[in-house]
Length: 108
Length: 119
Image (tube, rainbow over all chains, first blue to last red):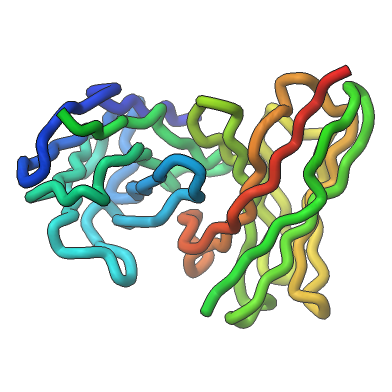
């Protein structure tokens, strides 16, 4: 099973700042990595798939990069609605599909 | 628009069974694989099971293998999760999610249904 480790656990930033979230895989997932956003009381939403492709209707301020074992989700300028939890997920070697433990982006 | 609506959650005693349903609309259900994902209170996401678009293949997480069964009825655009031998650690919000193009990503999610296992 591929283990995904996200860091930091919590990111405290102000609106307008740049957010950089990390996801590291226990073995290579090539580019088969996705990012999801989840707000309290809501279902997750797909943001990025295949490491760098934005999903439908996702704003351009969200971008993904990486290959192999190290991946990054960048939010170029935080909007108030971006404060949420973010999860990475791999589909390289499944089953099982696995998620990282999550990063909370909170308002500083 | 794509909609996934789960139902069937509730409070159940340990060892008992429960059946969740997920009614889909707004897309051609019979062309998509479907998943179940859960989230324990205050915890992260855990993938549970997938069923191929035609029901020909099913895969499970080790944590539920042998206890949970995924199925679908394409004529009703509905998928199911039969949960047997429930344990306290199965307490979670259970989400139905659509597979994106057969690849193992989740592009649409339901709102979730809460299952609480307690005596």
